[in-house]
Image (cartoon, rainbow, N blue to C red):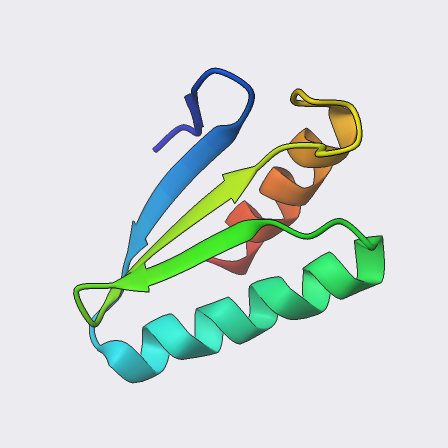
Length: 77
């Protein structure tokens, strides 16, 4: 599944078997974000779905940093 390009961000929804797996994924994404000092918007919903949205807030649009973090997030799966 590809990242969806929206106005000034890219986003992707991930679905897991249960809440525990979804929460573990959120924590792993948080670790990656801290390492890169680049923080996504994260929404955990419907108990097992996680939507990640990436943008470079300081630039007002998607940059290489967003694509780099997206690739690292995909590698978690």
